[in-house]
Length: 143
Image (cartoon, rainbow, N blue to C red):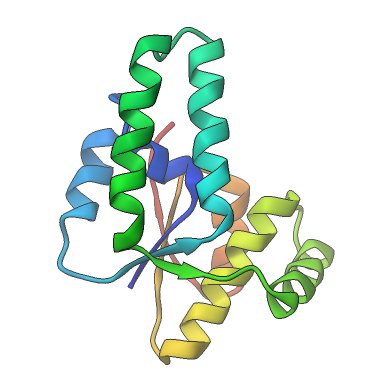
């Protein structure tokens, strides 16, 4: 299973460094998963691209519609009390931001549920370092 954090997944919908690698991974015939928080994170990331003038405002709705059309294809890890409690423990062990800790907790829970390793794909080096320390296989996508 391939688990996506938002920093990597957003590259599927924008032409930027790492987009080709993301598109290649997304075509692999494996289940793709992410946390429910990714939904709002993608909206936030795309609005930021509009504010920074990287994404023309007129294209925002088209890109969001592409994302919304793709969303049902993901196994979505629910944000529940177990994820929140595990994310707090991960924050105590690693220098993680809250949402990154939630992503790491989600992939760890997913691995436990399916009984096999997942590949965590991210552009966030702190998240990847913490994931490696938690024995998660990772793939770094350049920023």
